[in-house]
Length: 115
Ligand code: 5GP
Ligand code: ZN
Image (tube, rainbow, N blue to C red):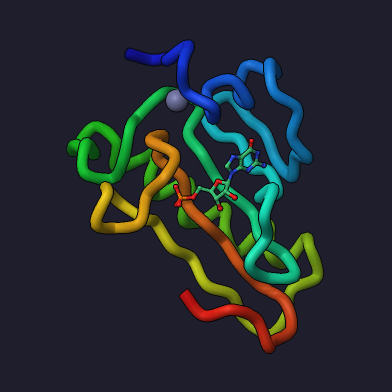
């Protein structure tokens, strides 16, 4: 399924739910997390509905690579110079709450919550 009408991040991608966007192209969208755990907390999502990293297959390599390479670009753009964390929660035991693959990118001056 490329779009899940019940998925909150598909709704953000479709513009049905507002978000503070940081980047957009044909394949990817990046927006600010609504409950940031760091001074700069972005979520990078594929526009296509992929539930989690557990569903990633060889054909997703390019997409996943682009998500990873976008992370440092967006941190640089946001003025983050001291480092950042990139994290993909996967499945219930991985702490994933929204079942649409997303890369958390968290940067900015410490201290901030560990997790
Ligand atoms: P997860 O626990 O699935 O890895 O993280 C989901 C993240 O999505 C959480 O950090 C949560 O704050 C964020 N989030 C959930 N709903 C929304 C929303 O409607 N808008 C935005 N911008 N972020 C959301
Ligand atoms: Zn989705």
